Image 1 (cartoon, helix red, strand yellow):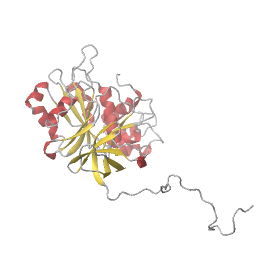
Image 2: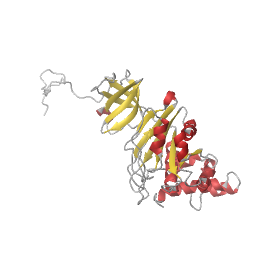
Image 3: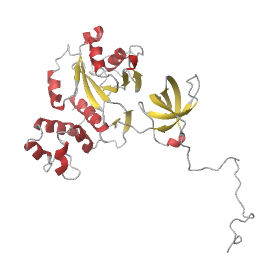
Image 4: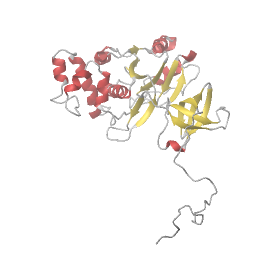
Length: 336
C-alpha cells in the first residue's frame, strides 16, 4: 500500500531529525590542496615528529587515512598548526607515494609485513668482523630486503683489527656491492667516518645491523651535533650486543649532505613478504634469462631457464649462484 502521494517531494513526508544538530556524514573527503609537505623523522606511540621546511612539528595521523601508517622517511601532507611551538599538534592528511620501502616480518612464518623505513636511497648493512662474529645469513637477508624494496646496498665492516675482512668480502664479491672496512682505531681518529660519509653524500641512507656491531657508534660520529643514545656492549656469555636504539629516527648529516636513518639492532629478519620476481631485478645480467622460466618460477628448480642462460655464456655462473643463495635465505633461519 502506498503510504504517500504520487509526488515523492511532498512536504508531508516525515524525516528523521538529526539529534546531534550537526551535518550528516558524507563519503566525500577534502583534498587538502593547501597542505604543507613534510618528512617523518620519528614515530612514537601515535605521535609523529615531522620536518616542515626548517621547523620540527609534532603531528598525528588523520582518521581518514584508516589503517595506512606513516613511517620514518615518509613524505606527508600536513595541515593545522605548523608553528612547531610547544604543545601544538598538526595532522597528517596524506602519505605521498613511496620510492622505496624497507620491509620485514617477525619471522618467515609471519604473513604480516611491517614497513621499517620509506624513501631511503640505500641500505647500509653494518657488521662486525669479530666480537660479535659476523652472521652471513643475516647479511643475506638484509640484502634480499634491500633488493626487494628498491634500495642500493652498502656493506660497512667494522673491527677489522680483530679479524681480516677477506673471507667475508669474497662471499659477496660477485654481487658488486660497495663496501667500507674500518678498525676501532679509525673511529677515534675520524678516518673511518670520513670514508663512510663519502658513500652517503646527497642520499638518504638507512643503517641496519646486528646489535653490538658498532652501528650506533658510527651514526653518532656521522651526526656529531645530534648524538644518539649511548652505545652498548657485547655480552661475554651470549656474544650478543645490547640494543641501544629502540626506534628508527632520521637525522640530517652536517651541511645538508644527506640523511641517515638509524634503526633498532636486529636479532631476526623475516622475509615472508619477499617475491623472488622482485629480487631478480637486482641482477640485470640474469633478468633477461627468466623470460623462458615457468610461471611462478623460484629460479632454483630443474626447469628454470637461468641454467641454460648461463650455460650459453650470457652471465657468470657465480652470479647465478649468488642469486640462488640469497633467495634460499627465505627458507633458512638467521642463526644458520
